[in-house]
Length: 142
Image 1 (cartoon, helix red, strand yellow):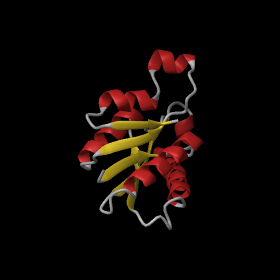
Image 2 (image 1 turned 30 degrees about the vertical axis):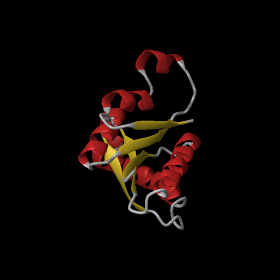
Image 3 (image 1 turned 60 degrees about the vertical axis):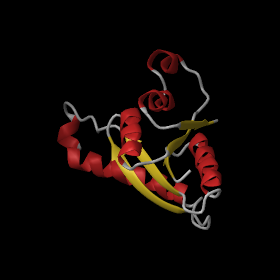
Image 4 (image 1 turned 135 degrees about the vertical axis):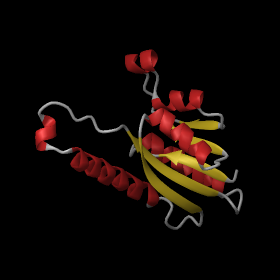
């Protein structure tokens, strides 16, 4: 493995996926990780727009995403593996799959929450969307 994209959302499943990606990256000295936090476009409608302008919502979402990336980064500080990070905006599954391909990643390593809800069965989880949308190998970690 050379370049692995690792989506993080602050969950324990994402942390386990990050640790698995780190273990894989350590197997090859020229490997690197690309951490991403993806979130949907802010939905501002009705009277909310009067109190919270779009720019403010975008700044709040970006700050939230940066905080999640900083917590994930703490796992990598002394790991000796190169990494980059970024916050992405858009439909989460599509955005993750597309970004991995744009960056020329070799694979995506991501957490799977392991909770099967009615919503997951009807609409599909983010992990399942990425699995179906990506042309790259996708490793799901429980």
